[in-house]
Length: 191
Image (cartoon, rainbow, N blue to C red; front, side, top):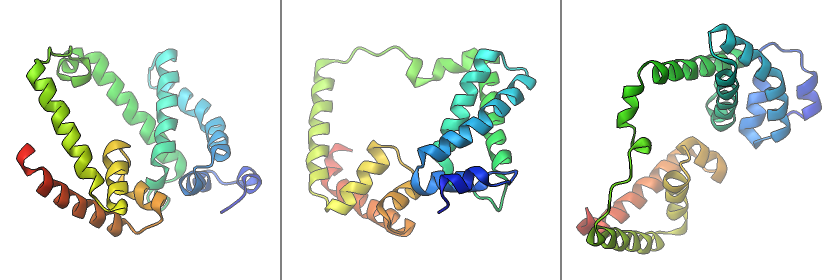
């Protein structure tokens, strides 16, 4: 992997090496370099698309956060870094426009719905289901439990888990499948 000095001095228009460095070792220094380069450019682009300055600022943050989270998915053979980043920004702008123009669509958003009153017996049942699930998770082999936790409790993509654990993607999927079969058998009465 290239050093930060080498990355900074590169004279390449698409900055693909920066994203590769972020994907490979979660380099905060390289991300800061990418952020400094792209943030003003993305903001200008969003302003040109008609976003208000405050929204443009938010979308820049969201765009670059998406780059940080999804750097492992970047494929330089399909697009340059700048094309990929500006496409993310454009898609986020489109999503923001949809929310602005159709606020009634947000009515069905689960996060915005008021919390329903929970009956005591339902709450007790939920606590019991959670207890059984935790016990069942403890019976899994360590490697399977680790994959389940990363996938479901930390919301990590399979490719990210593969990278984090240093195992092939197929191994991650196989461990997850085996864990789910085992959990399903143990928890059948709960479903």
